[in-house]
Image 1 (spheres, helix red, strand yellow):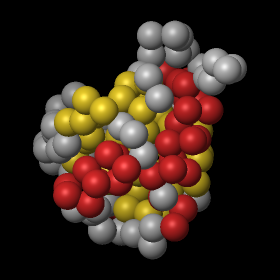
Image 2 (cartoon, rainbow, N blue to C red; image 1 turned 135 degrees about the vertical axis):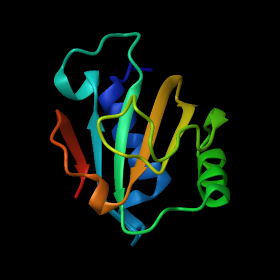
Image 3 (tube, rainbow, N blue to C red; image 1 turned 90 degrees about the vertical axis):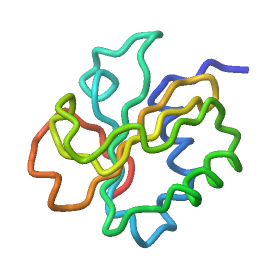
Length: 122
């Protein structure tokens, strides 16, 4: 078995989760240290998902479980989290294929900030 990079795992996650087939999803980005090229073996994968409408908690949980995610924590941040450069409606944290993920969901009006990113789906 070959060792996948965190970016490859993120691409697999985006495909397995079904973002491309979800009409609510406008774009999916990798952000943070993986996008800037500063990530290492201990880095988590930070993803930003631009959506027209939020995907309900129960639906996200069902989809995460269906693709084998574990240690799932849903909606761990709110609208005015000062730690984020953009406003986030929700952040989910989980493990997919032995890699920690932080996936934040953003409505279009929340994305008026530029950052290092790698586009997975647009």
